[in-house]
Length: 477
Ligand code: 4AD
Ligand code: MG
Image (cartoon, rainbow, N blue to C red):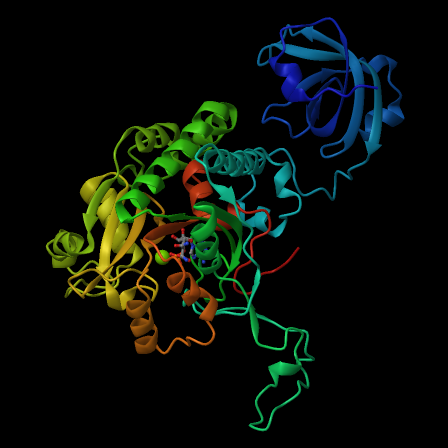
């Protein structure tokens, strides 16, 4: 028997033919109208039951959340709210859903409540829309890079190097942690561990991607990355997905051009292909906005904001220019920043990034040429000796969405830097080899996938754009 998807049925012009669909009951009213959803699209299809000819025992089992199979005729609907509906000829309850116990009732639930039911929250309209968009974005990412001559490279998840310095790492071990073997110095003897050395979950696939870029030209990784920082914010996860392109023979300007074009292209793809889900989420935000004081409401609607990003140039300024703007800004002078900007060289916080993007420039901003002291060892030193060829892309509501750089390709300069920072050359011998054998200018960046999904869906908490979020004190499911 051929099964139809609701998405296909709702978009077809053909009616009066028999269809078979399976899905979950969203609501059942007047013993007659079933709103059925199969996940293929945000919309339900209305299925009309001839209840006089349906067993009482079956009627009782048509409850919210139940899985059912329906055979019927697709007809034009006389009712309001839908173009077509199904006149049921055969109905079968495949899986019951106990009405007193099923948590996802047809009413508004708080996002906090839904987080506690992350295994069922996907059955709500909001999470259906968010996760379908997440899937579409992931596809758009692969499509963009494939069309632009990149090869997909799978970086290892377990890594023996912790040189990135991107944050605290999670250890990977098969030792008995209750009584691990000790060496002469009474430290844990990792030579007896599974890999014969200390290993961690990766914080970034960049260093490995660089080795691949130096042979395949243009590569990208798109995989899970892990950071054991204790950041309990709406923008941090302990496990998140990162997209990291790495390109040989690309300098920082080409890197910035690519980052901007890439972000615009994937957002445009979503605007073109995910209209229904975007419209639903825009409406959801509109409802949310109504409960906010007028001065806290967004200036742009969701879809308008996405179009704005696609259609306008990102503003590019150096860190030094940004510091000047921030130093002279109203919130800095009125001491409204939690971290006041006092001098050149300080690291920027989310409040500063958001001021630049949301208040000062009112558009996405790319900051480049950061002080050497606040960026990673592998970034290329500028001739001034004070700054490196780093770049961060800053977005409204999100702050930093991309971090990247032109890499230091000069072996002696790189070694000096590693020396200074106490990074072991012995451990990174393979990374240094890329600078010994056919070194060349190269660049890359990392985009936090969940932050992009947040921007596109308008969800304010990063926990609501990944199926099962991992955050401090939370690894349920
Ligand atoms: O700026 P980050 O730390 O850069 C790197 O890891 C580089 N190795 C990337 C590269 O050049 N290949 O992280 C990159 C991006 C950030 O801009 C942010 O969007 C995201 O990853 N990110 C996080 N997203 C969610 N939760 C976290 N804890 C994140 N930490 C970083
Ligand atoms: Mg960063």
